[in-house]
Image (tube, rainbow, N blue to C red):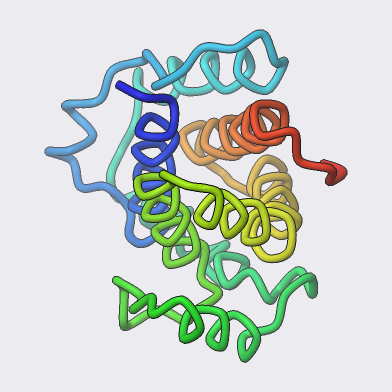
Length: 183
């Protein structure tokens, strides 16, 4: 598996976790091994939180938790991006948001686009699009979102997702050589 394919899969995992909470059947199939292991502190902390979460996870508590921070899932909440600009960007690259019921700048739609870009990153043009999308649209708001849920989520599961998302941003930044600050 290519690195870009792995990054694409991780983006989809995050996207689905913030679109709707997992039901009890899906939760029972989870294991404590996150998709990637890194030396970043956030990955280590996320792994511990995920392990803790899987010991006593409850679908109802997860749904309640997501409901408490669902306003932050709309990344314009962090004032780094604008809904209209994101919609225009989608139009300019012919991207149809997969979760039509959610806003264009909802974390799930934005991560779904990232997954598509990673999956199709085959030439200089697509690589330039990836860099532009990450630095101008996604990473600044995604990191703020991850920090928000790190501190505001009630369940260890979503706190783990926050830690893993920060780790994911750092790994992408490092591997692609992006010149952005991860605050």
